[in-house]
Image 1 (cartoon, rainbow, N blue to C red):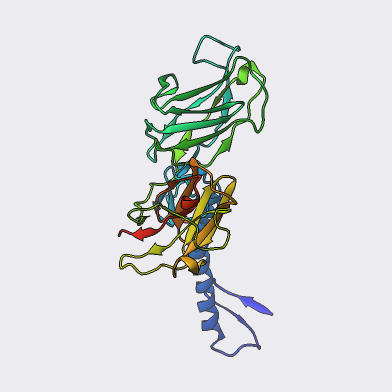
Image 2: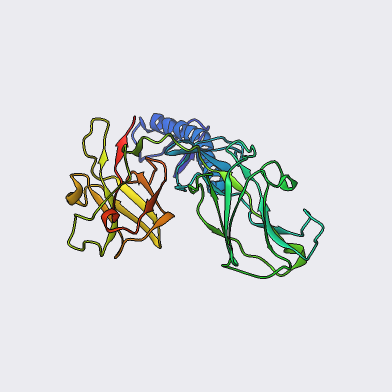
Length: 332
């Protein structure tokens, strides 16, 4: 039988020793304390999880290489978010892009189809003087941000056709520096055979500040020599090198990333000892060919974070230049 008196204590007759009343009073106070203190903490945790899961990638920026914060807090709290959507490129599409509407920028009306937009930095300011690259439908063209103010201060435009057409994987777009270094990945832009959707607005936004590169190319690189690392001779073309720290010591276990010529590949420094303790190698083909803007290379850490800028590496159709040496050195 339970005997309940005031709210300060309770006891069970004939079952508990005399000191159980004091223990009960303590437990009652503890339960009320836990209810008052821990409930708000639990609710705060739920609100934080809800805010974090709803955060748009267009609203985040890098404060440091591994921490994100929200520029526009999604709720009443402004809390740090652990990095979960790292992009190796500092720009991406704005949330909601591409957005489709009727042509308003010229008098052609429906006898026109195009892609246009703007580019914005971390603070939402227009960025002028970057290259926007478009491929597809027989086009391979570049234009500068700021060249079409009809769409805003950093406006750009591509004319596609004189009538709206439906496409899916025909057109792709990329933001670049004026030297052609990619600032975003390629994005496919669908189009529609509707007069109300013959203008595709494609805006880019900056995700994070481009870090100061801690590694650069070694002086004199790329250097071109005849293949000596295998028996293929001139029936081979490749790119190889090493990585050195501030004191000239080989750095093993870093990632060298290569793109171009149908390749998107990573390899580790120290995986090809023919070139030295931190040697690496990429095989490009079975014969030397001349290229200019085909291959790009970048040094990264094991988490994929850039340690260097992106470098365009030309190649030559000559047997005495079919091995391209590209070594990196630490600068700070």
